[in-house]
Length: 439
Image (tube, rainbow, N blue to C red; front, side, top):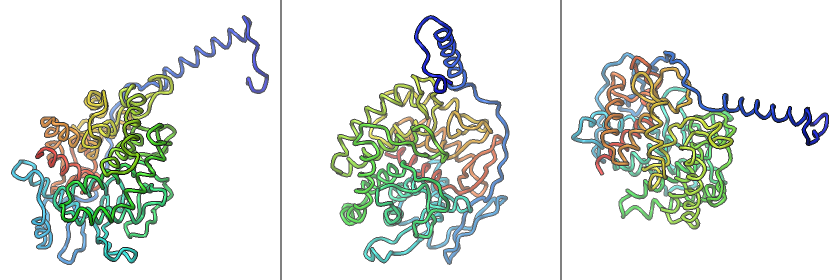
């Protein structure tokens, strides 16, 4: 209306009074609707369990187990031989059987692609599936990164290298990654989802972590083959943050929804990217990481590390989510100031009836626990020396597997496993948490 009728005159007339009243009304509306309110009543959503697990036949063919399966065939001779080539985190603990199955499940979800023509002397490429079922039968850079680290830390360096090499092949020239890829090595995507800038952080972290445990005799070989990925991703991280001087542009994050504000789920992985690049000796990454760390503390940290920052102060801020853990070890060198307190406090709004966690405090209150989030909390606890907290979540995850022993994506309010099983990200988190507990 002001644009149509001109700017109001200053003074003590109706315009001034009306403007003052309007401002109060607007501020009240913002305070009422922009602040996080109490959670909505819990509902008991139902999602079926699509499979109890995934088995590999002698000929290498993958076969999902029916949801009602209570047992699974014994591992093949090839799988048993593969296990002996590495180690199983948690061996000798009550988690050994869960870890053994999680490792076998990641192997089952790792599809061999073979060698590529442009790199005949390089590693055999592997496509790491998020899960076997159709809507999950893709390669997510995030899930693949976690799985690569879990494989590397379990002694399966060649598979870890092959997963990273495949993602290097499909990486864009500007260093970024798509949200997900078809598992055929083409670099094509299944839909028109926009790229996600968090992939830069996950891949640099995975490269740094994998190289950190690579045997010295093979380090230079693998590093030289991964140099293109590392260089391009570092350039992207520096560009997206203006060398650590600004937050990255708005992008979808692991919630995979359209965003209108920068989330911590996008901002935090860029710190992971810069710190990992610095560890890998990339020029300018160290100073950029130091600046960007201070920036995250001054922006998200000052508000308690919410998913979305407020527009004015904390007005409009949303509850914390899984990404509050991304500003703590093992993702960054040390917890950002206030991050530990925010991490512990975040659990209350995310808690679900069966005992697990939802992706965030503002996630729909459907009663469903998500194992990726719950296992990230186990991982952060394990890597920050809170053994009791880590074991609390690991016990819960172990108790809510399918009857065939695989880790599902979701757990219903009554404790039943639901959706896909096994899920690569959760399986990797469990293995990495157990590895941290052994350090």
